[in-house]
Length: 338
Image (cartoon, rainbow, N blue to C red):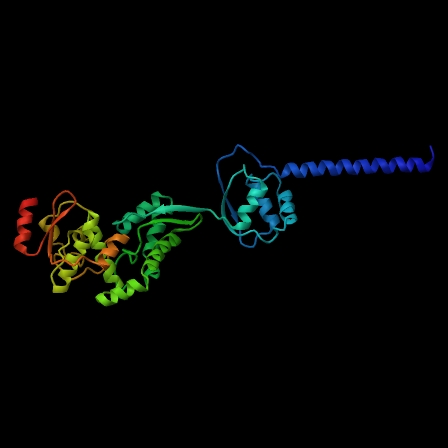
């Protein structure tokens, strides 16, 4: 066999080796872009750090078992022009997702979020316990966040000495928030919702009424705790507005409950005599601050109270109240319903 023939055979052999190697590598590359486990259903919280490179992301995905090969993922991302376009944040991903699916999440910034809810009429300690139960942080961390004046500095008086400055400003609602948000962000999110509620129209209405935002929220929190039936909220608000206008004590049981640290139940005579600035059976006008988180219905009722002449009301025992103009009528209602 001549030298040229041997060279030709060697060349063909090398070409075959390279082709086989290329085919094998290509096959491995394609296989590396398959989902890790198509039957997987449990999500994995995955963090893309700010400034992370595509290679960093690929390596981290592989470490978390979300892609088969981090290098293959990075090469694939670069080939499709995604290099430098992956957005930072927390994502909820599963091993059943393909690299295409994962890239779609990361490039579009579909960051993970959580949902939490706050009910109307809860005071801050009750809100914090609810948030802890919903996994929004430890009670200690949430408590520290609620003691900050910063979120509500624009609304509360400079000399306000309440234990929780955010009392009344944690607007009850259902919220979506970033998966990695901490207690400070959770509290700030609720206060921000209140800030948005207090738009120019409502601020102008309060100015017409001669009330500050803090006074307004304080009164609305009392309406929230006193009202049970939805349609009575504007009426109860009207009663309290009437009392304030003539300098009459509010005598709201809910403020006594707040003063003694008990959310409800019958009040004794000694309870009514509790020495507290929140006891509206002893102090004139509004207490120093809100006693609970009023919902939008109570806020609106306080902003637009029913034009009534009533000065008194008493619970009937079924959630509704009997209203009266005079003390004599009120006493008759008490004798009837208690």
